[in-house]
Length: 370
Image (cartoon, rainbow, N blue to C red; front, side, top):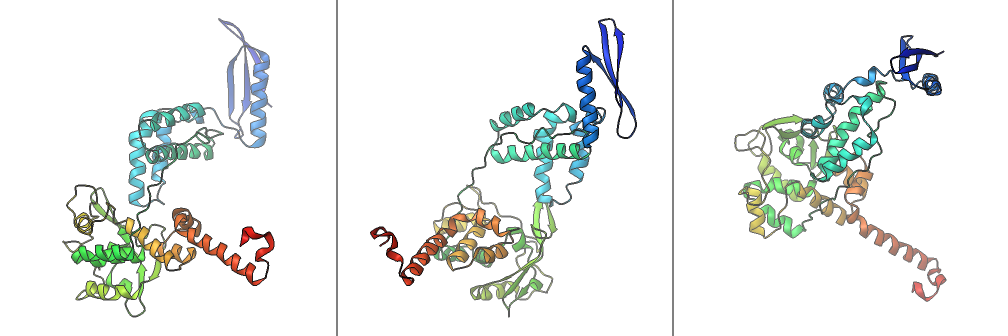
């Protein structure tokens, strides 16, 4: 049981609270002018120990910078292309403000002020990533019992404004394929299968079954700091797609004369193809092809959206589209492409009308239903 003891200072009498931590270490808190303040502190300590929520004040002195080292090293679940922006966010936005701050000194209002200030200078994506780094480190502090609460949680955050998706029609996609020349087969695969760029350039001849029209997504190649990093697909899961017959001739030509382990779409040096630049003013083959077709600026990744659009317009359900795109869940597919499923709602309503007519209850609500 904690005890309260008086003692004398030059400024007058004071009280201190002596107590033991859950691991039986002796601690004391000095400086209470009033005895009732010491009693309140003693009660708080005893309740926190009883609830298993006790935090040793000395443990809360570790800085966010010290915890960040272990936190960053623990992000092994992230792929190199995802880890790099996290590390940059820590170095550029989080460390300068919070690196030397003790985890026990972080307040909710201070985090909110930091988020607000950063929001005035940077876009929502940058702010949310930086906030995620700080909050993630403080989550570790809570789990390590260095603080009892993560004061970064619950702050008001900026909302990301999604860029409208670009959807090409069948005719526009065909024109882009033709204008892309020797890269046409790659464009066709991106536009009809929805592969990510890294998945497409990681395809090897052995991943294609031309007779059964099966395509196995096994590798994902991403450029990080000028180096090609090769790993598993984004969700860490391999998947198999069935591609349309119209791709067979183009894929057959792309595989002609190649060994099983050769890349289907290699770069000029025979290795992984580098991501083509799609920014305005670029002279890349992709930008040139867009200009030749009279199409608005877009990126190769936008062809993934076209694939989703073409699949849904042909009658594919959300689960099939999810599997094709390699999304983690059907809910994610619906969130990303909710606008493409609007016609399903119309078809649903029309179907209810047809069922009502068949049951002879269509006019139940009067002329408004006719």
